[in-house]
Image 1 (tube, helix red, strand yellow):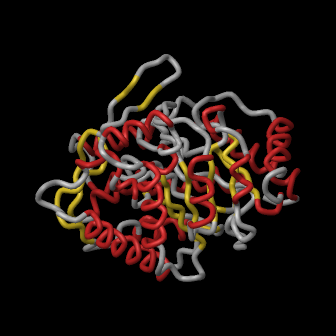
Image 2 (spheres, rainbow, N blue to C red; image 1 turned 90 degrees about the horizontal axis):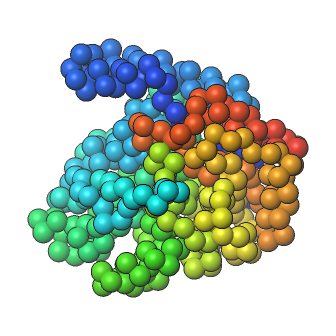
Amino acid sequence: MKRNPPFRAEHIGSLLRPQALKDAWRRHDRGELSDAEYSAAVDDAIRQAVRLQEEAGLKSITDGEFRRKSYWSHFVEAVEGFGVRPSVFKFHDSHGHDQEFLAPFVEGRVRRNRPISGAEFDFLKTATSQTAKITMPSPPTMHFWRLRETLSSGSYDDEEAYFADLARVFNDEIKDLAGRGARYIQIDEVPLAMLCDAGIREQVKAAGRDPSRLANRYVQLMNECIAEAPGSVTVGMHLCRGNFKGQWLSEGGYDSVAELLFGESKVDVFFLEYDSERAGGFEPLRFLPEDKVAVLGLVTTKSPQLEDAGALKRRIDEAAGFAPLDNLAISPQCGFSSTVAGNPVTIDDERRKLELLVKVAHDVWGSA
């Protein structure tokens, strides 16, 4: 079982952009800031974000995903063959409103002609003395959103040929990051979590796909995409139900994919959303292998309300009834800002939640 990383207190990756960075992004988009001026503003914001994480007591540090428009945008921009189209799925909120969104779409043969996150990592490792963590969208995230219409007529006739090219992109990127010194990579996976939702499974069936077979293929695709990762690299998978301005894409416990996911996936760490009733219970953790770690996403990034430390410890105790305490850790359920807009919380809320994670980790495991 790999340790340090992962650590007992983790966070998922994205952080709230400070207002100065949002302003700089808009000015750069309007042509009022040069590329160099905008890059300097991003660098400064990342240094501040690193300081926030380190002062909170975290040992795995990200750049907040500040160089991206969304958690997947840099991938589409860097890899030849991708564009965007409207997804066939929608975000939901607690008031019953739905929101459409754009998602990756395959326009041509995909090729990695240059590094995707190399520059992100190179800067981050100079900004922190702790473990730098790089996040990337999952392979299924580059396929799922339009179901049978994800591949344009001018790209691939054979879905498996696309998956093979995608695996080449991921393996080459992971090896490049490892060569730069990266030791911790987190892959953000949404489709597998969505396939736990009964309504979405019916939508997938209506499109002519078998949701169980698709989930199985996605787990195998993930394995193919990390097959060449060096042993020195810890690879994690974050299971996400969608995170946009406090909205979500899906609900439902992990029960329908747990045995497949935990039993077949070759990643070292699972980051699991457990911040609401939409996530179901801890029973699926009974399938967690003894050499894997489950990071429990018990603290929400969708609301400013600060969780009670005692309640979090009780939930960890409950989870430990299904998987050994030594195989568990704690984190937020997702990032604080999967897009530039961010969730309906403040940077002070974010700081308090990160500090709470570290405190609870020390109380439960003796370290963060």
